[in-house]
Image 1 (cartoon, helix red, strand yellow):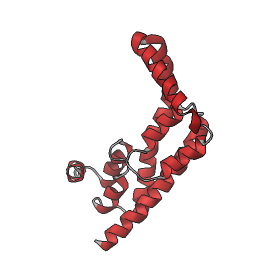
Image 2 (cartoon, helix red, strand yellow; image 1 turned 30 degrees about the horizontal axis):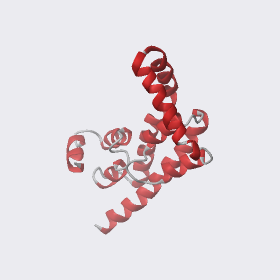
Image 3 (cartoon, rainbow, N blue to C red; image 1 turned 180 degrees about the vertical axis):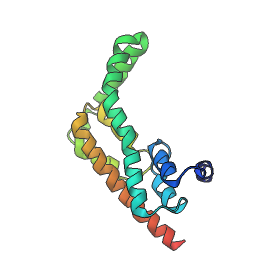
Length: 161
């Protein structure tokens, strides 16, 4: 799959390809490694491009989720009711984690594993009712830490192989 992505984006400038990969949910955690190892970007250049790319969906979700939620709940009939019920159910299930709130979100985002990317983090912040103005800085810090860990591993692996 990675080879297919690299081949698909080979016609793009490396910076644009890396940026796009960083915004996509299934490739955001490997975009930095691809940028360095396959597209031959410098580590710091890839780090900046990927961090900005990771933040685009976070800003979109944090900025639009509340408006989407309000619109769905008011205009979508049965689906809107199901939506509101599902959100309330998730909030109830995660209520015990409220004490960790923003720091928990930061730790979640800092781990460079596939499921906990920027999109997941922004959705969690929205669902748990975290204020977007506070959540984005913790999400950004988590993205930076995760990307630094990924960069350290990638640069190490590139030098080994």
